[in-house]
Image (tube, rainbow, N blue to C red; front, side, top):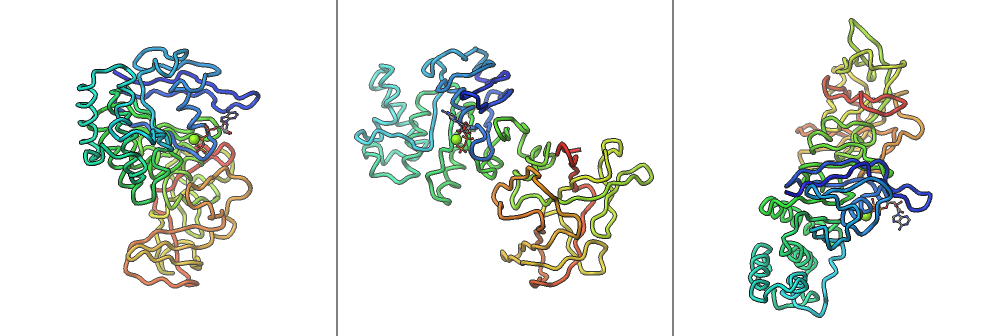
Length: 376
Ligand SMILES: Nc1ncnc2c1ncn2[C@@H]1O[C@H](COP(=O)(O)OP(=O)(O)OP(=O)(O)O)[C@@H](O)[C@H]1O
Ligand SMILES: [Mg+2]
């Protein structure tokens, strides 16, 4: 059994606190992804788990054993990094078997394990080559092979695919997921790519500035983000945000979007003040002609991806967010608070400059406290 626990772990570099109050429980067999923007502390957290960095506070357990003060060699884990660090003068066979040889395992046994791993990773034909005669994806698989043969109680991977081109990355991604399912080994995987996190993880840890923002399944994070940051970070294109008034009518909280009145899924007593921040995913925006109640907007850009279209339009007057909202778009950072997107799949032709009406479907609107940015 190899569950993993971080108990209130801290990490400081001098006065700088890189990790704060890190509490996490990963179950046996989980594929857990740490995701967040550059510098948020993902690698630091992973290195503390691996024993490559000391903690400044708190404890870490692997398989119920406190490993906080154990060296990396005593933690029964295998790591795969971005730069796979293969030995260039050794064959693939020797690279994969290296860790076993260091443990003085019997030669025949090493060979059997190496060949089994190579078959699993489709490297059988390459066993006698040296790393320089392999593609990037094949090299990465050798690095995985080296981790697999050690039969560790956990795999730790830090951006293992970032040296691969886009196509190979997608392919290797699904290979890693299949392999992990087959082996059932608890895995912690670090990436700054939210799409990678959503597609691979059984459990995602979203981090920002050394602090865990939310822990959940991909569905949890997508459907019920805990705050504005997670809402903006998870999903692409990212969620639209806008400001709006809040009122109570017949005991229900309502807001306005353009001239549409929208009933909110929020208990009125949770709303403090006269306005809130709202979020709506581009795929949930309703787009219609000017007879539909909603906000009239002029399309500023129409991106056609075949049947799917991404419509850009200005946020309705007076509803754009102001100041530093703490929103960090994961992959559409060029977007500003003045622009919203709708993702539509229909046969209608949209023209740049055309005026359409956009509206919000009830039940799909996220509401955030305007000061704390916490989801209500
Ligand atoms: N040895 C160190 N001394 C001082 N500061 C450090 C050290 N190592 C990391 N940091 C700082 O700690 C913070 C977290 O770094 P970390 O490498 O964990 O980020 P990350 O989330 O892995 O980012 P990336 O996606 O860019 O790899 C950063 O601000 C970094 O500058
Ligand atoms: Mg890192």
